[in-house]
Length: 114
Image (cartoon, rainbow, N blue to C red):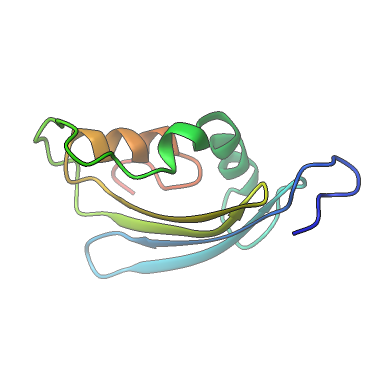
């Protein structure tokens, strides 16, 4: 993937699929630098990724202890490329670790109660 000619940043092209857990699913596209796509808040989504992608996009490591606090039925997937790196992430709110990942990417993913 070629870097953006103006910023030198490798391109971002993502697909975000959100399931609210109650029968409604949404699918959005997102590109950054500049923020665009069908995502309802592309600027907020790109900002959330810039601030938290390193810790929130990777899966929770196997064996990590997580508080067994259910944060809701929502699930999401994020796939494509983030700054030239392949991304294939799944998100849920099934425990404290997963909810923390989700909350770190609020803007990319809908906030609690959405």
